[in-house]
Image 1: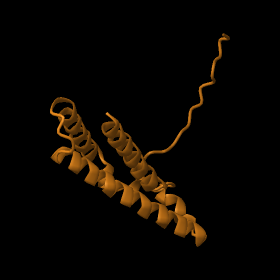
Image 2 (image 1 turned 180 degrees about the vertical axis):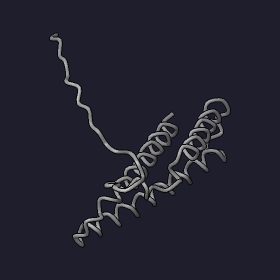
Image 3 (image 1 turned 90 degrees about the vertical axis):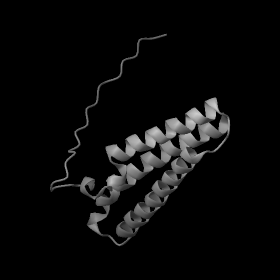
Image 4 (image 1 turned 135 degrees about the vertical axis):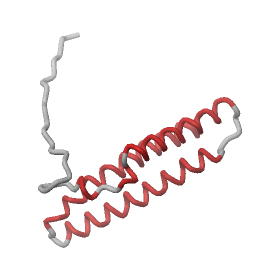
Length: 121
C-alpha cells in the first residue's frame, strides 16, 4: 500500500448576513437555527429511546419528528421551485436562494436518514 497524501484545500466563504450576501444567508428561515436543531435532535433521541427500550413502534416523538421532516421537505421543494423559476427568468438574484435550499436539504437528508434507520431496525 502506498502512502497517499491529499493536498489541503481551504475554501473561504463569507458567512455573514450583511450585504453583500451572494448566496442568501439572510434569507434562511429561523426554522433551521440552532434552537430548532437541538429540539429536532432531542425528538430524534426520544424516538430512538422508545424504539430501543419499549418496542412500541411510532410514538408521539416519532410523529413530531416526521411532521418536522415533512415541513422541511415541503420548504425544500418550495425553495428549489423559486430558485429554478428565477434562473429560467434570467434573474440575477437566483443565487440568493442557495443558502435556503442548502439548509432545507440538510435537514431533509438527515431526517430521512434517521427515519429510514429507525424503520430498518
